[in-house]
Image (cartoon, rainbow, N blue to C red; front, side):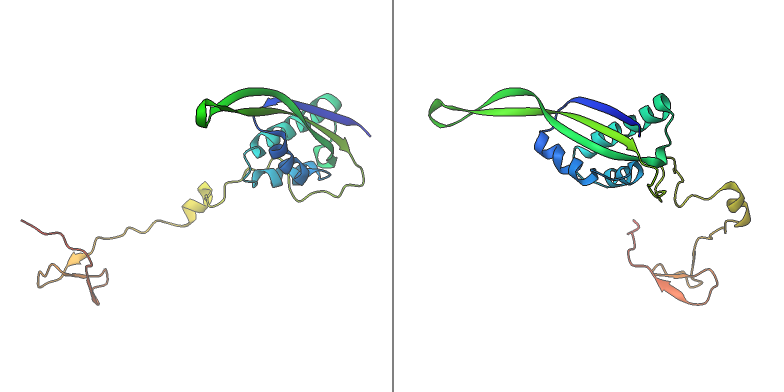
Length: 175
């Protein structure tokens, strides 16, 4: 079984916050992990998603592996550099603030027994958009503006078919 890895150095998010996201996707297939990361609301999810896509691209290009058979063998989050800051406190004292960065390493491996996932990496179909053929089949109806009633009242208008008058909710004052 072939392994592929990708590294992300100096991510400006604390390691314990990044581990919340990486623990979710540990052991998943690459496609399922991608779907999980897309819908995650955590701040580190887009960075981990980008790292996963990089690892999948490494596997495809460098080792000619199939992306539907890849799964996450391991994902490790290490402590990176630390920015030291101070917060002013009472009586002239200062409280230290440590802004810790992270290093993330992801290792992908192939698994022949892995079931084909229902998620794929290259499905980018726009939902709700019609193709040109569908647009030609359904002609657009021209909507006519409602006309004033025959009596000329400003608070009533006649509908398109001329059956029932409808009252306006808001009427502007005319000077």
